[in-house]
Length: 239
Image (tube, rainbow, N blue to C red):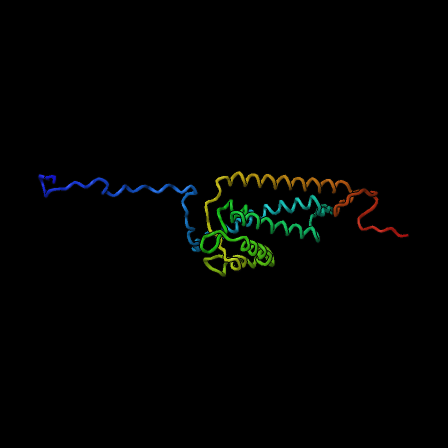
């Protein structure tokens, strides 16, 4: 045996009896798996952000409205003013585009353009991503939340649900809207959105001005023709 001058004899370990060193686990190529944190419904600033996001979404959808008016809508001028609107199936087409807008954006990452710019996201109450069916139900119920005008029903429901701030669509789909980091390129997105809206408004104004300066032309319901300037809208000729 080996002699330890400062203590009892020490017998050397036989070869191969020591525990092998612990090998570190290889990193996961898919990255760390993070569990979603549960939703925190105590943020009092979300209502202001939701209103701001709604205003931005309405601005984007106004662009869709102008596109339809220029393509298939009615633009009328007279008595020093003008009006443009959608009737019948044209209005249904606009409504379908509105629902498709919210569904397509929110089913992909839980954010419409407005939510992306202000930093909001639609999630389930446990923080996970909602299913496509939940987003579809939430989107369709916007028709009820909008009533009677400007999301009045939805706004009252948000106030009635306290800190959860859920409208009818959220209650039915089991979703909440939480704060998240806004996109880093929100300035560019907002600038592009504003530029597109200005161009569309200028195109609409140009069309209205052309019709106002040409009293001998009819431009409605996708029909265009010229008529004698002595005629007036609504005139009938007696036999």
